[in-house]
Length: 280
Image 1: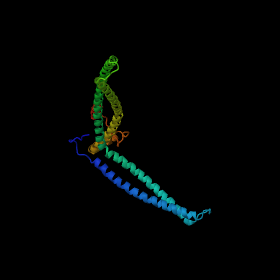
Image 2: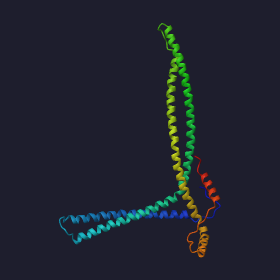
Image 3: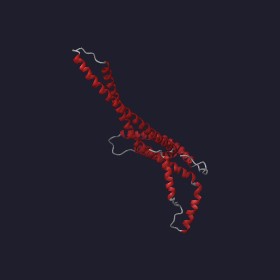
Image 4: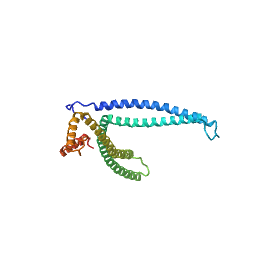
């Protein structure tokens, strides 16, 4: 998606996302390190508690030392659980930020994939047409050779009858027989090739739908980034309208202002969006 060079300076929203992502990566790394240490500590305290209790297996009550060791082991396990939850939360936040940050690159890649699939489809169709043309030509040639072989065979048979058993295979018949076998092998190869090409062509619609889905999701994410980049220039005006309306009608929220988009503009934008997807 090309950026408009005439629009106002952006707010740095994407740069903020990138900075937040870098900070999250550091937090994830630090938490992973802390979690590894906590797991080692948990395992060590659990082993120590088991070893103490194993010294007196038949006793009904545990000693104060054993109780302290068990409490420490439980606390270490709880610390691991807390860190695992923290890491899970950070990983989700990291994935969400990464998804938004990588949206422009995904959009460019998806557009290239759509173009590549379109070029592949055209190439396959051209190759299929060429292959079927060759198949028809070979089939006609085989028919001509078979007719020639039949005529030569009939002539050779008659020659054998009239030659009192003395017979020499006509070179023309040998040549046509060899040519016929080669032509049939070639035809079989071409038919196999046509089947492979047809199967490949039939697989393209599924690939196209997936690429188009990826393109649209990435485009929506990029559009959201564009809105957030430009919103600070408008948010004060929007807030003024929302608060003013709220003063007149308390039922209207001061924190939300709905904007109705004209039908004509929606149609125009839809047409432009459709034009961004290469024709299938």
